[in-house]
Image (cartoon, rainbow, N blue to C red; front, side, top):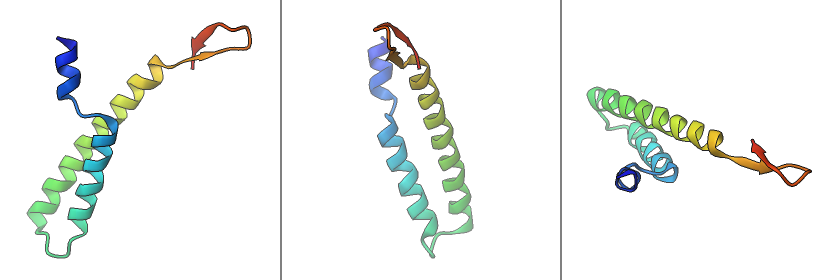
Amino acid sequence: MSDELEKKEPGLEERFAKIDAILDAMEDENVTLDRSFALYKEGLEQIKAAGQSLDTIEKAMLVLNQDGKLEEF
């Protein structure tokens, strides 16, 4: 079941691409104020989710130390 959740959850690259698209849309001079607020809210949600993903990745990272043993990064 966790494989199914991973497939549905966007990856970091997808999230960053979405954030970039949101920024592009917000820079459009024809965007309405209501649409700008909706884009802003969506952007914040994407940034928060990306931050949580990065935290999870950082906690899972291991490095090989000088003794040849794995330890947390």
